[in-house]
Image 1: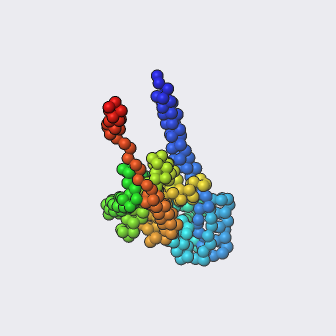
Image 2 (image 1 turned 90 degrees about the vertical axis):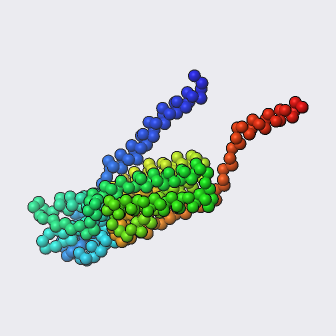
Image 3 (image 1 turned 180 degrees about the vertical axis):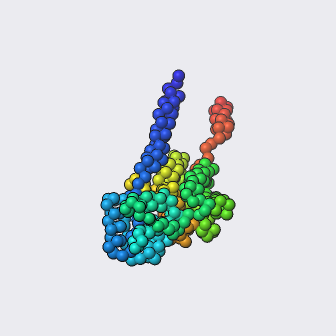
Length: 332
């Protein structure tokens, strides 16, 4: 057998297990290590009882980041502003747990278990869901499942612009138009049909469109800088790492460090956080994700706008004709 096909066969044999191992590491490892890491929670109420609750949280070293509040109203405001995921209020009747399943159903359940385990056996723990998840998606499954389709839509847009040779203003306008249409279609499905997001319709459409634009322009920008290899790099960042590190199905603070932080620097994680903020919390804590998505979009579009159009290769038929004419001239 020729040497080149042998090398290609060996490369395929080695590359596929490597890709599978990388995918398992990216998806399975964070899921297997879910636990609270500096998870923001609040404690409110009278000083002696609230101090006891705070000490119980702090006994789990590094698991919780405790914020003190004067009363239940202040704790509720902090939850609605997405400063904390939940809070425990010390009352004469016992601890009163405030949660926000819209922020993360997984964290809400975790706080229930942690508070129940920290009080004497038989003590009743009252639970109030301050910002409840929508009835159409009580476990947050649909919202978590929406990240991968958005990443694939952005990948498809960026790859199509690259492979079709669209550069400059035409390429940028194509990315903008495709992202806007995806945002409208996704909002029509998730908000109007499924009812899994319940905020302002047009704000949600803008958040979804910006997420797709950040992914698509990021891929197209990498391809403009590194050629078609940039598409593979974009797939690694946006689909493999961005999707698995996003924390949308749980919370960034439940993922191993520094996976949670890295996920929020990538468009899928930032897009999931932005969508939660505008869909359930009236835009609270949307500044950070909005800045991340805007930077990815601006840098990617700048690379597409400044990239030179790739020269078209000379067609084989024309090359043969030119060579034939040259030989005829030399013969004459």
